[in-house]
Image (cartoon, rainbow, N blue to C red):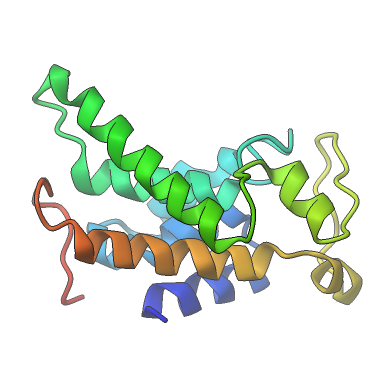
Length: 163
């Protein structure tokens, strides 16, 4: 397990959403303040804005990979980024025991009834007991750390491994 996995798990248990938890776990390596990491990923939680679409933890992976690999000076870089994101998605699907990156499907598979709306649920013991989210945050952060280590080529100089 990567230290980022443990950090992501801890952030989720502190009350941050799944995307925030993954991105904040990488803030030191990305040269971001904790506050900036939490702000830039806030809207992606609970399947993007609590719409239960793409898993927020995986959105965190995409955010981190974008910061590490995207070359804003090269408009043609999109295809390379799309390929990296699709590879990471395949790894996530394989690790979560299914073929989904969709929040509502991951919640249903874990037996947690995915609710909608805009109001975040209270973080109670019952909430944590029925949710796979803390473990998915850990899994996504571990996956992201392993992915970055396995793909040193193409990094845009932002990522600092020794932090």
